[in-house]
Length: 359
Image (cartoon, rainbow, N blue to C red; front, side):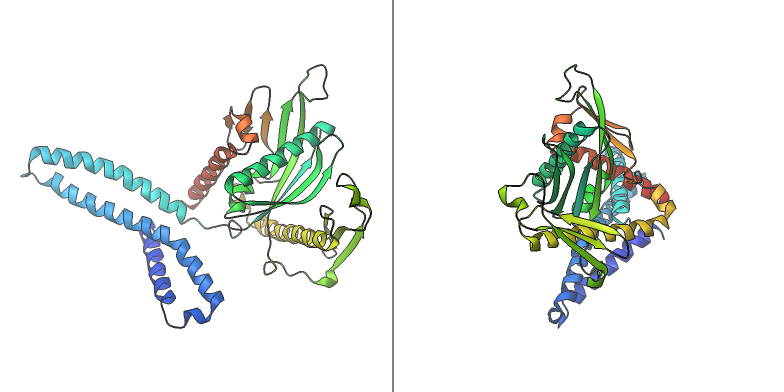
């Protein structure tokens, strides 16, 4: 299907949705109304951009007539020719933007996310780096106005995290964070290093789309729930009751646990949220493995064993190895506010690769 055919199809669907939303009785079905309203809202910016493109094409047609008019004023023809070239560049840009907007959407892009950060090789320094990363994502969420809710922390005695899990809620969270999955490497002089030698350690990050109950149906009979006393930092009352919860999904063997809250009920709810996300992600990965060609066109595999990024503190640089991007602004990135530049570049590369795969 050509670009113009795709654009006309979008416009026709947009008009159809407008008519359906204004039809009598549509408000009688709240769920249907919400679904139609969302699709209409998603298509509206695309329809508006198509309108801009059509207007630009009409303008260039008029200008080309002026340029072709041999009897017209020479100065006017020159001005029309110059404006014509400017419009051609603008039309090319609009067409490219529309191609990106028409790319198939990842169904999980608009979902909230579960982010899991774990210390890798490097002992205490790896745990300290895992804590740095976790706080980086927390600040990034705050920068975007997202809700960041800690699900589970497994802390070391010196301020590091062996494992840290949080749920992040907001608009388009998974779309922004999905390329963060993988192994993050740090090169710096640890605080415990007296000789000033640079050490290399690592932490892994996993970003999972948060699954809703309609996405994943989990039967109570398939769950084994264990309660135990929480351990580690958390206040005087943390070890006095069996408030920590571990849930095992027996058919898959997938496990989730939570001890962050003092309430067993709250810990169970949080653990279920993580469990549902892990099962949903396992199903997504299984489906993606059947589409290997599509995966090869994406930016990296997102596999946790893949080293995706290096943070070199002595040189003040961050390098994303998947797109050979190096930024000398490690402080801004670790504070969360500079992370958008990396994510924007990864998103653009992913879009370019998917466009190339379609052509």
